[in-house]
Length: 259
Image (cartoon, rainbow, N blue to C red; front, top):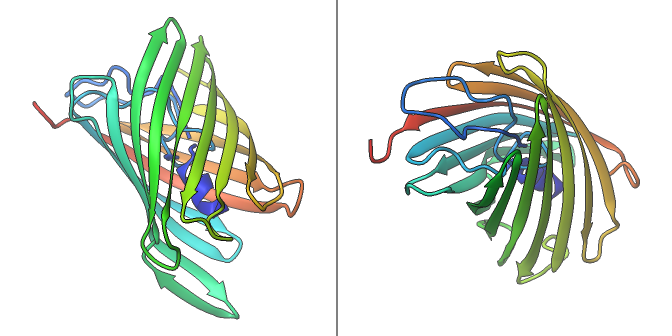
């Protein structure tokens, strides 16, 4: 569950990531993304600004947690000429070891997120993102809730906060009734080409489980019309410290809808 949350948020879902002065001015002609992290997957937080109107963006990554190996993917579409986009997040493959035997299958969780920018003023961005979760195997029911995303950027510095709450539709030990996550990431653009580094902190609490505190760090490597991201997360530091590693590629295909 934590793995999927780390993936979704979500920083995804993912960061900004995050993050983010991200993709606010992409035109149909190919151009680099602004220095920022993944909309949903690589970091704890996700990017408050939606992708450009009419654009399509795809993410594909590799995530390692203990003996588990995962291929998280995100597809984001902005079909309307407004500051709104729609995203679906899923693990294309889940591979884990149980009793010494490794099993691999398609992910059993789909996250659906609608991201709408409510306010942009100066370097401040406020976004509301209702979200839902559907389980396709092993678990019953789903989840519903939302995220408030706030970002403030000045010069080469950017801070992003995500406050996320979801509630179970048919709760169980593996699908807790209530879940809250508070996440913060700080980003620093390193040069004019868009190379960046980020660090972050996350606090999580859910029904029937101990509170968890996690940290992370990563880098962003831009290329034409996209970027690669590498991140390391130190999860549940206050209970059972675990390392998680991620690599991800994000490509914005430009203005495809209504061209």
